[in-house]
Image 1 (cartoon, one colour):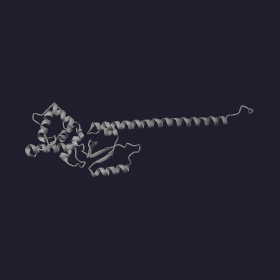
Image 2 (cartoon, rainbow, N blue to C red):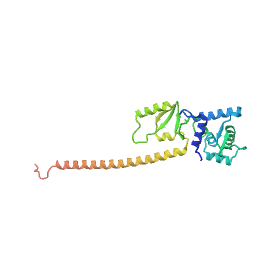
Image 3 (cartoon, rainbow, N blue to C red):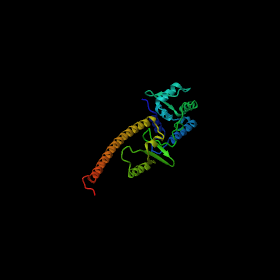
Image 4 (cartoon, rainbow, N blue to C red):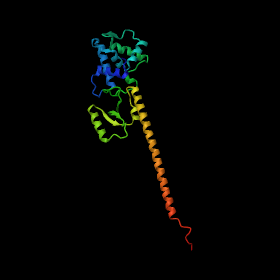
Length: 243
């Protein structure tokens, strides 16, 4: 089954970093891969074996994209071999040698060269919306209800985040959308959800504005009638004798 870039990347993370604590970054992942590659070049016997899915993850692409590149720009030597029940595998040295050829042709770049900050955090669930701000790792939250997040709730979230090395602050979705996203499809889903919520809220506000306008008009009309009635009661009578 084809894997998305995010799912394939998670396979590679599991292979090189193991269980995540919440403090690892894209930069650390790429350094870990580079360190393994450097060691494997010195001692080929310790070259890292990778499944097809893990290989796609190392290159931070979907398995479909990897298939496409293999078909359109095949390596000079066989890269993947079939083992067991039609399971393809390779090792890190030939994979990255082919990736270097693709990079030289402008066909591939590592994540950190695609606009994803090296200090973007890796989380237990990908794709992720986590970024590291100046001086602190931060997780961006937006209240999606009519009720604002209370200070007490924020303190609880911050305490929770501190346990896994995250600082948490509340921001608007507009600010969140400006941060790095692992998967554009997930970002589009959030944008769609935001648009629907904003449209619904705008509709409620328009209805409320109409109700307030009607209520204001009613109050003004009643006040005007009261003033006219009061003025009529105190107007001088034409039947009174004038001196």
